[in-house]
Image (cartoon, rainbow, N blue to C red):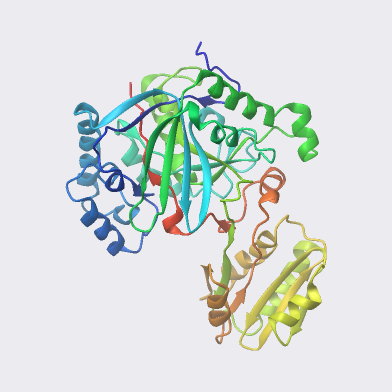
Length: 444
């Protein structure tokens, strides 16, 4: 039994980090699922890195998935991982968490690198595991990613996992005792990524304190009082990188099958390295993702109204001379107010008693059917309200503005509604996503 045995599937990992003298700005590279349509970004990253040791050599930007040279790229990844370990470029820092401070766009968010037990994760609809997906998992996205992980001796996290800790009992106390911790890194990230600092948390009392605080979040009585439910507890909610976590799960299932292991057996591949973040951290911003539908014709307003009424009991359509006028009249209304724009002007749908927790859920349930039933209709997901107003006002189109998701509603929504509608929110823009830094062995 490990001294850090617990009931919540938290593994204290052995972290691998570059030895002294490695240029950390060249080492750290943004998550593989960013800039997937922008080869210039990755070409510039290649130019910055040059021949220096870098996580660019041990990851595959998704821009290159399913390309003719994919197999050669994966073989190079595995060779570089082996080289970095055998030549001492990566050093084992021993058992411990890493406390991370990431500053970008004037905001600093705090995180904790831990390993989570994949036996406590199930991404299927209706899951009641401690770790859950927060958006629908597209299973077709897993096999290409599994090809990368299958023979890799190491893993690196770009996965962000959220906890609901309004009293700030898990991560934040470490930041108040940095005198107990060894600084692991402190440098500027390339390509407008901001600045990052990391500290090794290997003091036994601190590690046990983190685990105890996490266990307390799902204390039966406290959890029931917090969420007014007796459902199986949700402790870890995927914030970013769900398909990478799902790939780690698929790889563990493969290892179990090939090596004759069970859910009771220990193996490095059983765990996945992630960064925990508190959903209540002031540095975390949930940005809305709006919708524009194309080629839907003039009757879309009434069609959507009828579908929303069918799905929610009742729905009103209201028209206004401007968005400002709409906001003034509809301010404080209970239920869901969903502003829209088309070539004739602006308005909103008002659903007084919505079946879904969030406006995005109410709207998406109707739009999914509209797109499916309307020949030639398409949908796009937009960050900027000004872009929505421009595109939505063109002939045949409609734009919808959605509110920022209340971070306080995030966990209750996942608990009671299950996985959120796709494209519900974004945790920052591409350059604000996690950069690869820490590594961990996933083979015996």
